[in-house]
Image (cartoon, rainbow, N blue to C red; front, side):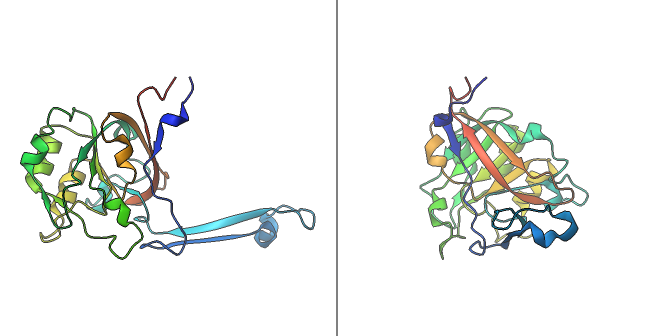
Length: 228
């Protein structure tokens, strides 16, 4: 089995230390600083290691039930069966920040959404990433979110904007709908325009860190014919 990498699409933003809206710090240093844990090397030989400190919501990231459900699943025990699967991209590039993505609009895509799908929302607002206007976004109506979960039985949802929540409502009802049904949610995707007209196989593989409610994630989509 081989992979045709011309059919692999990167859906994650590049993360830049000290330039993210959430904390991301890196430190790379010579292994001599590890003391007894370092390994001797000749003068002039390049041999470094590093430390990273990051917000769990830094960059393109996946959120898990623990984010809003006490005792809910976290990055380490969330099942891979809900992080790998077929994805469909729904076009909402006509929406502006503050607009609502309605139940009727999602129902118009009903034939494209299959049971067990990962649903990605293409707003085009990833173009604002790392700008002063990175945060505003359109949101999903709560009845539309419930329809996706209960009727279409999706396994995950994501957006190339920074959220999909209506923050004029208390307690983040969309987040609670998602997490109380043990789904994952992805924020700040990119490159959805490259897979907007097809179904792809998506892999979302966060770090397996116990007890965190979200994690930056490298996400890829493999287009049809990409696995040989």
